[in-house]
Image 1 (cartoon, chains in turn green, yellow):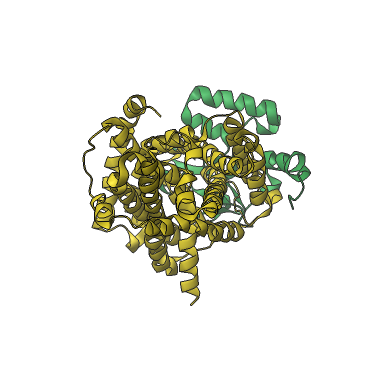
Image 2: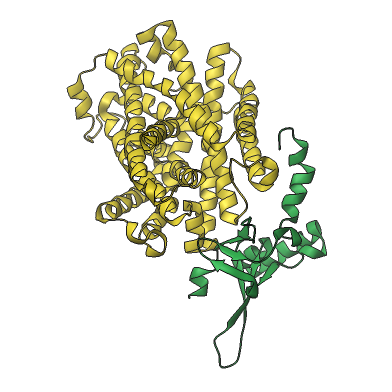
Length: 120
Length: 406
């Protein structure tokens, strides 16, 4: 499997099939004398900003920390051992509600969307 | 029987998507200024969009990815950013033009200035997206959109010289106003080959849960639906050529000149039909573009999306369409001329084409996505042609914009 081709930028779903983001980055462990081993995937704006350049990455990390607190100062990581299935989407054996990934959507729901009539 | 119903519904839907403020305004302008001479541009645009829509539907049905998903996954985030930003910008301008079209229809109907209608129109469109389901929007708007067939009826009733009409299907050089002629050709192509159309179509295929059994349906909808839409555009062009030119209107620079096209044929009801056609076609397009903005962002970043979900279950998705609709209403509310904006955004659409069409060449030939259903020679030749056309359009649009003026 070609990791950059087949995993990076794929849709990520949790065990309930909830779409939680894309594989925005890969975390690999470099082992002397052996090919690097993938240990986790990263999701979120900090990882994306880092792909555009070092400076935008730093800037986004500061912004995320200011808006979301310490919990959001680093990119969201999911351990590679949690992979359950790789198909159209890549499924991880996690529950998005137990992570900080959807914090901003939850905030949006509770503070904006729900206050508009008819939001369900 | 069920498939037949689905196909006819799909055809009606694609008419809803095809005929909007851009194709109506550009076809009317072209007819008034150059009679039947630009029919070839409508035909060419229609053929191009048939190919792209068929591919977008096939890609979605076989790979279960939308076009936006596919571009992000296949080319990576940094490459995806370019088509993402270009499409968001072009969609924003086209959506403002559509809101402007509805606002003009309401101004014609009530006499109250169009800029006062921009925010109410955006609000109503938002309400449809907020409360409606995908099926409701798809069916409701498109069935009402059939009112635009009055242009085809009108064109036939005017008894044009069909020989001359057919001669317009062959590209010829203009005898006067060459810059204006080419600028109109570019705008017509931009109005027919809109990225939002094929991107929306692929999202719709996922919303309707298409799989490989839909490939035939897809081909029928793409071919017949887009041809149907193109026929109505040609109807508008013919009516404009025969009515507006006969009244000495060669330069359509004001929407208020346009109802005359149908009044001449149907009398007072022509006025009603024109207002209804403009209003409904533009409102439908505004809904589709609003959804498309949300699809694009949500799919690009992997958020939960779907028009059938309640807004509380996809807060990111519903926020995007809410914000886009109200932002797009602002230029019109500030009094920006909808007709100028329409023509300008159609030319810009044409110029943005390479960014969204180049990926088709890779995605539709990648066995990991489409397997044995990859493009044949003809489809690939069509994509390469559209890309080449897109590059030419991108290069000529700006000088033409300056010399032809809008």
